[in-house]
Length: 252
Ligand SMILES: C[S@@+](CC[C@H](N)C(=O)[O-])C[C@H]1O[C@@H](n2cnc3c(N)ncnc32)[C@H](O)[C@@H]1O
Image (cartoon, rainbow, N blue to C red; front, side):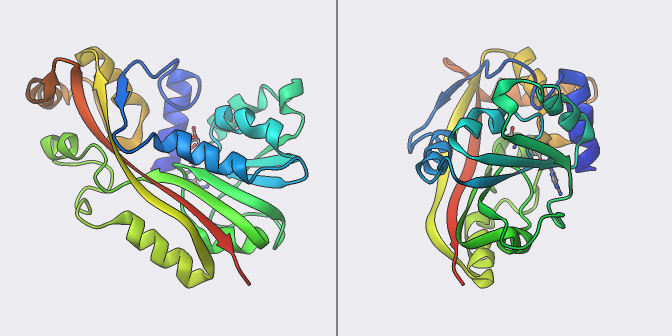
């Protein structure tokens, strides 16, 4: 389901997401998780380090951090996204990046191959990430929190992790990572707000993200209108977001 979803989105929009975004405004009361994730990753980057990008999609983020590493291997199960990423292969900025179609649950890499691994809203197969990391290597993750788009999902009566919106994903992930032997370096929950300028923009956004993998602009029109009416503010249509950021180290 997920694999097809990302292939479908990439075919429709020419990559991950819905094109040249974001076209919404954001407010970060406790900090911007994307910025914090990137800063933490770059703090531990180095020109002699080899990194794994788990769920690299079209390689936009991979290329943005590639200058800070010796080499990055990007893996994904979405062939359409990887084909888009590979289009840049001949360019100078891609010289230390290699993409391959691989399932993060069972990669083809040798044990203890990477200095660090990161995952930006991709899958969380921690046992495999532990295996491929060198001793003292770091794993970074920015993931979707249980309260992400909660009011929207409640209005729709479905959505990503619907039914688990009361269970702390951060606690669950931290426990799982620690049980494998990872040492916690950083773990934080980030709740923030996005404001969409109009119905059309929110509708377009929902076509490109997995909040509802089965989102259908026509079928979901009435329910989306209901949400828009309820959450319209002076700043735009409000959407509450939730991200987790974690940094852990493999100790042996
Ligand atoms: C939300 S997208 C994020 C893409 C990219 N990391 C970014 O930040 O723009 C999640 C990506 O994870 C990939 N993915 C999902 N399950 C995977 C798996 N088991 N192995 C490898 N990639 C996977 C999807 O195909 C998709 O491209």
